[in-house]
Image 1 (spheres, rainbow, N blue to C red):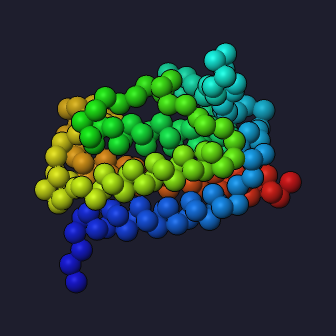
Image 2 (cartoon, rainbow, N blue to C red; image 1 turned 90 degrees about the horizontal axis):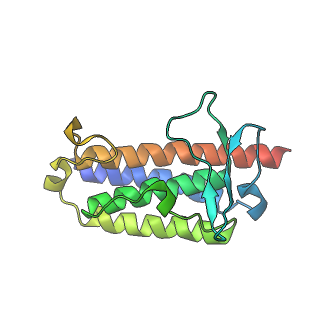
Length: 173
């Protein structure tokens, strides 16, 4: 049996997404902004009526505990960035990706990002996987589209686990 690299990456993505759906289906609006610790990162109402994520150019020490709101915004930012980069478009700054808000609107936003990502994956052939890309690494790192796809899967898996753990902790209270 032969499996291409693209097939393996897609299988891993689908597995991770299935785990995410388990939590997305169970998230309540109040889960998003629940602060699990005094030292946390979240999203806050901004002056223009949008949500503004907590942010630092260098990661603080100790690292703040993120809220589900911050994690879902973070997924939206890096995933949007990866998709734009694959399409040859400029990567948005973190301030250019707005969090939609607590509840169903964010869940649908994430599902839409998944649909768009699947469209990107569907347009890639095995030869495309060897093309060198400069996101999220420096241009001279020599990483390829295959690396980018693997990074998206790893980052999504990590964020899904964090969201799931926060949801379970809040429910246990």
